[in-house]
Length: 303
Image 1 (cartoon, rainbow, N blue to C red):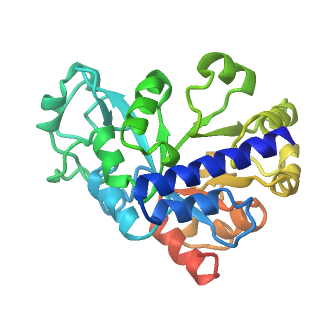
Image 2: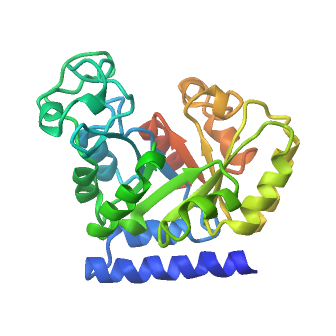
């Protein structure tokens, strides 16, 4: 009962903040209504891993803008810190794979990072630059939800920037930690921000951890990650859904979903996305191929 009250309270706070920030109904109002609807609608939410990177450089402004233009529900961004303490969006701690630079991100000032160019998925140098977290917040404000990854070293800065721009209602952070550890470490820091627990299934201790998540996290969603379909805790998916949580599953690659991934979807929709929906109970899918996923969901009336 306490958990349900807290989740509803956060939803009300988020929607009130939305009206105040936008001055009129905006896209994020709709997205928050879906997120907090206890999974009662047919709408399956799509979160794009590093944006639409199959058509743009990963973690680029263009990759995020394409997700907004396509009406997706959320983007995922990865944080690194520059030498002069500015949060930038880049997955790796080093520059070599995704930019024209070399070495560690933290050894470069923002100005130096901005002089570099991002590479496409096949390594071609683009005209795109490394965005800052603040630039992404301004781009996304009022339009799309933002799941922030690699946030733990920068928790206070993330919250401060989100609140500075009135975007806190759009932020989702995920954790695999038990509730008591998070309370001890972060206290009320993330008040008004979605703090979503992730159960990485191991076969032992899964039920106890899920019980903690369901009882003590005021989140509208719970995420499951699993390498095999036979983990006993997966039999509790109907219980999770009945309790009013949306269920977030990853389709990124096989170690998150027992092989029912984006790559399989290229040849077999039903055993990839179809399995995640019907057997996995997903109504939020975190995808490396969000446009293909959207096409499938539209074809079955789930968007």
